Image 1 (cartoon, rainbow over the protein chains, first blue to last red):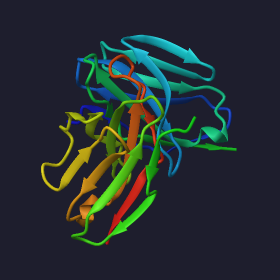
Image 2 (cartoon, one colour):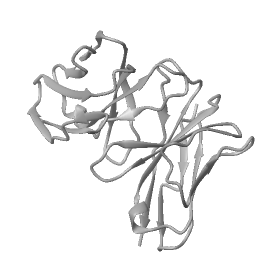
Image 3 (tube, each protein chain N blue to C red):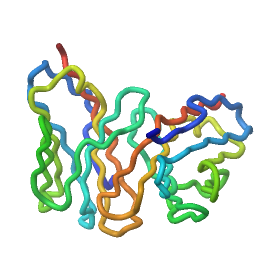
Length: 112
Length: 115
């Protein structure tokens, strides 16, 4: 079993829709949870991060972490064609030198 | 303020040749990470380095792969005697410090093709 599971998609939704992206994980030591966005042929860029459980909102993006269920989500409101990209969840434990474990990424397409 | 720089962006090698991938971290960053991304897969951690030290190489294949981050100059990921299975995108990331959210800034990647 992979440490981090993510549905690869592809996911196609119309412009303006709410998008829900999810990951599950198995390592209860994970404390930092991140979402990266990766455009085609580019490096990933950090979108959101959350420490421990709870919600975090930034503009049209909301990240949720449920540690009891080992489940994290990213919601995108009022989706735009420019949001079309691959979204990677990522997480790590609390030690200072721990590596980041990435999900396999979900490819998202927003139809105009 | 330049971001993480990687070169070359594309590299073609024949089986058995050596591949050298270079990464210059962002200014002020002393922590460098290398990741490999196979087609349709997420990023897989390979190695974490600070200046002149390898901190964690648990993701590096035991043979043919090595990495360094010298006192001066870029970090180098070296793959000896490449095989077709080494074809992938290799990303470098840097951060100003370890721990915490440890935001890592990624470079554009080097796409290695082994013929």
